[in-house]
Amino acid sequence: MNETLPARIHEMFPRYVAALENLIRIPSISFDNFDQNEVHRSAQAVKNLFEEHGFQNAQLLLPPSGRPSVFAEIKTNPHKPTILLYAHHDVQPTMREELWQSAPFAPEVRDGRLYGRGAADDKSGIILHLAAVTQALSIAGNQMPNIKVLIEGEEECGSSGFGELLNKNRELLKCDAVIIADLSNFAEGTPSITTTLRGMSAVSVIVKAMKTPLHSGSWSGPIPDPVQALCKMIASLTDEKGNILIEHFSDGIIPPTEEELKSYEALGYTEETFRKEAALLNKTEILGGKKEILTTLWRKPSIVVTAFEAGSRTQAGNVLQNAAYARIGIRLAPGMAAVPCTELLCNHLKKECPAGLEISLFPEDGANPFTTDISHPYFAKMKEAMTRAYGNEAKFIGCGASIPGAQLFRDNFGEIPILMTGLEDPKCNAHSENESLGLADFERGIIAEALFLEELSK
Ligand SMILES: [Zn+2]
Image (cartoon, rainbow, N blue to C red; front, side, top):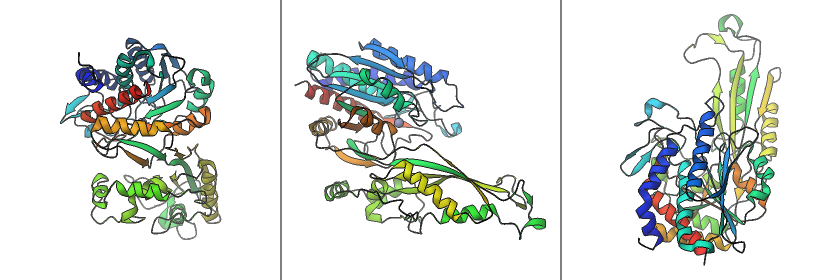
């Protein structure tokens, strides 16, 4: 057998793809209206997989929701650091199944990509950890760092019990660094470490004028229209450039440093690429500056109406609606905080609601933004390992999305390095139809993490 890590991983790669396919076959959708037995089945399959590969102490950890996370470990040497490897085994719903070119839970390889729900987000992360540890261990033996694996079962539906799970199992999960393999590479073939995440929250709002809808001819005029009222309230949230108009909302923002701005610029991301990746229509204008797209995505807050309901499109008639509903989602830049921002949004909506209309507000639990300091030597080592594995310089990037777990790890384990990697890419369609994983990067990603672990063994 060839002794170098990349060669060994290349030889074993078809087996890792097969293991990933087996996990994809389990529809582990963690949302309440889906069969939660599948999430249990998936947890059990993950636990078995780690046991079969020689991991010790494998067990299911149950948060209050009952969707199990999986723990397993490899103890090598008490003098070595302990690295905790995170991924999640639950998945998003399939969306419109008729749009999938192959069934979402029947994995299929086409043109070098593996298609299936969870292929990229985030069952690939599970196999990535499994393969990297197994291979690095076979070379470095008890010089390897100690390894703990934690595979969450409810990331997609909001990680509501994950903080409690970390807290309750603090001794079991204690570690010196975390690798979260649930993020994106900047482009296919361009390895990336994510250093900032936006936070998020959402508020549902209902504006009501009367108990039931009324004939719009017989009744409109004297009665305020709740639909227009809600539209005006929503319109007051931002100006035409997308700047948020809620007072004090953006006060806490920590702007990117000169160095960070330079690193964003060095990525060479163009308006053209963005338009293509987002499938924008030709005339759609870009808010926040065409040259600052990445800064707008990663370092500025945004507000999006994620749902709006007033009457029904299929039943539209001449009716004065009695109520209008919207769910307003906010994304928060580093420095902002979910609880006060959600409260400011609620207060703004109350203030803008026309007198005499009834307003009800339902704020959700949010997640705070996250930033990490890359001065710890692990970041340079990971960058070096990725650059070697991909044959392409690794990049430090930001991310517009949120992972509640990142901050929860910090809350529980203090200022340890948290390295955010992953195998999504701009083509992967995570959360949408035809999700896929680039197989070449899957192999390189495994090699990168194995090289990193091997480096820590020296
Ligand atoms: Zn994910």
